[in-house]
Length: 349
Ligand SMILES: [Zn+2]
Ligand SMILES: [Zn+2]
Image (cartoon, rainbow, N blue to C red; front, side, top):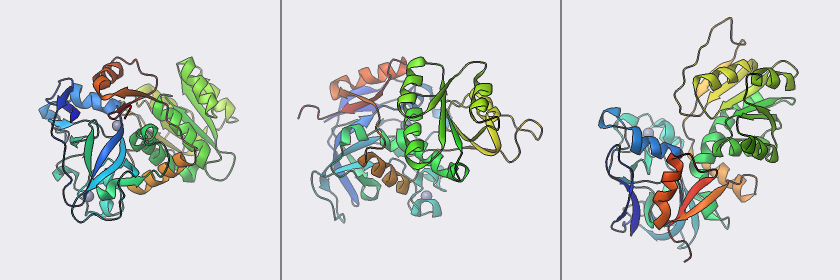
């Protein structure tokens, strides 16, 4: 079968002919419906080195936000029907620590000794015609479109987790949420905030097209210029937002999120740009929490799938055939994608 393989550090992935996998005990073989191209793949193949201490060691098949149809089950697996559609929960923890048994494999306590970080990050992912997945990592999609669903596994689960953890700050009426950075994750964050909170959503970016999309998704937008913080505070009647989500994560966006937030607020860094934050008693509003998140839990992915099935979250996708998969990655590297690229290995079948 064809697959997009990350073969060596600091090497662009290649389209290869590889063996079709067989499901091991406890695993399911999926016929891949869709595999999203994520920006963290770029860090994996372009930036990481053997010295980075990463779990995403080549060679392996890329694709950590995937969906597919049951093709075959391994020994010990029951309760699946051939052809049923599932979304794949990516993180692969040890499976037995306190976090893993709660379905929070993204925060596995034994990360240091695990062989891979996730399906598609250290172990073969879904950028292929077929993939194997531990049965417990599969989230049913029912009759919802599995191709457009693929990015939900990361691009919706990550903002969902950040928003769920901030809910206590957004309950009670008259609350404000701020979304900084209106790419794919930021737009889905607005949809999630609208679906599960009653907060007024303020969104900021520098690109007018991204701001227009955010408005269509239900946010009030503020241009990301030098008056950004003052304009956000004005909308909130002066006191600032109750929860801010920074999908960029560079020092200036973190500083803007902090400056635009109220007393007793929560600022979440979601973007992985690695910007540094400053915090002190005089400059930050009292009881302002500053935190970061990484991916989300299995139970949360079931909740994300439910929102998708109800039509409350709709990722914007553009599809690529397997033969054009590398083209999608080139566009991602060059910043030429405005929607999530989803590789569809069985396009036209
Ligand atoms: Zn990702
Ligand atoms: Zn664990």
